[in-house]
Length: 97
Image (cartoon, rainbow, N blue to C red):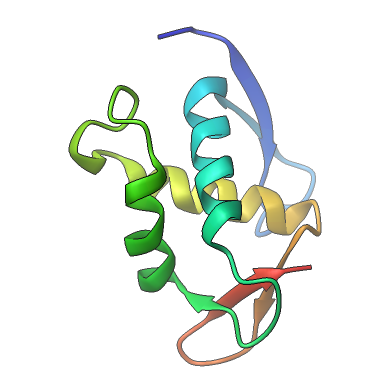
């Protein structure tokens, strides 16, 4: 696995960035966007987590290991970039911007 890094943002801490593994980020981003609904009502965190697993490469996420952390990292980054919308519902739901 490559040690290449990518800079990500977090909607909850504006202006702060982190560097994460680029291969895992890109794999999760691709999987996340493949399952994310285009419009409201969107999908819950649990629904998204279940849906992305079949789209993840086992070489990067053996048995889905750490996929929850990566899903949240991608989600927060895409929200900060305004590509994903968080709906003010209970439970929370997300969809494409």
